[in-house]
Length: 504
Ligand SMILES: Nc1nc(=O)c2ncn([C@H]3C[C@H](O)[C@@H](CO)O3)c2[nH]1
Ligand SMILES: O=P(O)(O)OP(=O)(O)OP(=O)(O)O
Ligand SMILES: [Mg+2]
Image (tube, rainbow, N blue to C red; front, side):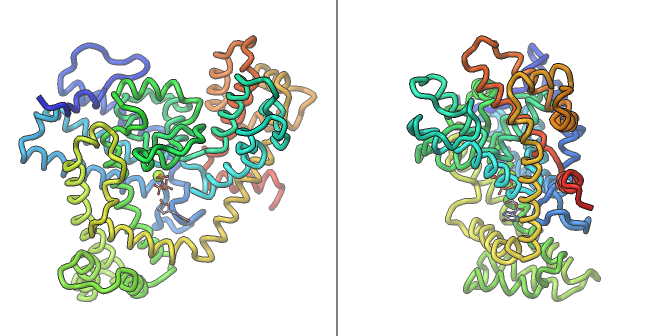
């Protein structure tokens, strides 16, 4: 009997009101069908339509947003999943791996993880992330939290400042300060799905979006064997217990990933690398001719039959022949996408199968498309050209700076809520406002009720007599502000900032 049995991983139970008892193949599929409905109908998915992929606040609807990007990732994810399954079937391995009756759920979990993979991204993408983290770092000074209590006077929040002789609380203070200064889109995605939207998805479906396994509060250097899996924070302190349960439900070892997550990651990499270049052409950042020139220059000498020739040169030549009565741009990208998919998808699928043991265990410490193969080199080529010629385009950088300013500005505007003494904020929450605090009351009214509910629920669970109470209350209050700001779309954040700064 093989020790690889996907029935142990494709856990269709839910945290609340879980289906119980034995389930037939059809019934299990229906459970995942329910996950699909919950995800597709969630407002967070719809908000992706106004979030930046590469070009902030883009008016041209042919240029990708996070939503259209995610639909493409979903499609590529399905392609890889089917490729994996059909290869396993050909080799008579489906039954051996416990997948015989689970091919439908396998595919569905991958697809929905792909659709959700950016669900927690803040407005303005990585710039939004940086703005949130810089803002909190400047105020909480997490680095100072590891040292001497006497030196810790830079932290702007008295409750979180280390106090001499207060060891147990100091450990918590360090943890909370680290955690709040490591906002990350993937970790926010887990929080959004579980704590804020309460989608109550199956364990397998949530496990598939746990892309990184590093706790956000962890300040240690990760062990070399998990360095890749712990490249970024993957979940917050607020979800610590939930993630512990998820790990046990999915039989995930320390810092290990859910096996299908590698497929989601590869689908994202394959999708965006061509799409970003196509969008850059649509935006007139370069012409197809210039792009082709950049690709040739970066690849170096290509020779007949190598991957570059089969994919890029082939697309170029076919688009020049122009026999389909489409624009040369459209043709080039159509061939480039098809050629790229036809090479990279089978390669990623085979890597999944070749490394099935560490992938199943969750310990495989690299991406499927991250090795010294021509396939990985091709992916890297696209990314390098985008980095050099697209992301640093003056118009893009200008908008990114504006995005950064908007997010930091919004945090400044909402910071009076963080500065309120505990009793005042609690009165605000319980009574919906405080008479002598007109500004804070109005700011509080702006927050979303689902975010406030998550705050209330978390704080209600704390015991007032617990010495941790004050630190934890403040922690959840900061999470509330981060939830609110990161949940905004680019356009909402932009409009809100201008309105509150009273700029026309
Ligand atoms: N505008 C912009 N600036 C950057 O520095 C940058 N780095 C990456 N990206 C885009 C590429 C992928 O679509 C997606 C995932 O990496 O985000 C960026 N976009
Ligand atoms: O698409 P993003 O912005 O989330 O960027 P990424 O390259 O997919 O990075 P991550 O590994 O943080 O999801
Ligand atoms: Mg991502």
